[in-house]
Length: 132
Image: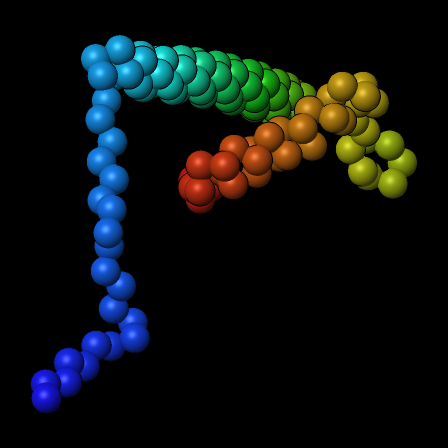
């Protein structure tokens, strides 16, 4: 007597299912794939346009800051030259021998402070050190 031993985990399939697509089904699937890919391309193009606009905005902002920095530096140099010319030309001394300087306007007091803050911002942004 022959005994056949079958594992309880073996399953025999009695029916195999096959899916058959017609040409209209294939066309429908192809159209859906093409629409999905076109939508992806549109989103990527929109993201690229937004990125370019942000980059242009950053460049404009940095150039504006640099222009302000350059302007304040030139004003600072002009003021220093003016002061040195006054010292060279002789400034009246008061009774305790300290030079009498003209009163500074608010904009003149603010320019060196603004200059330092712009300089430190630019140096931090570009990771550079101050020339010296």
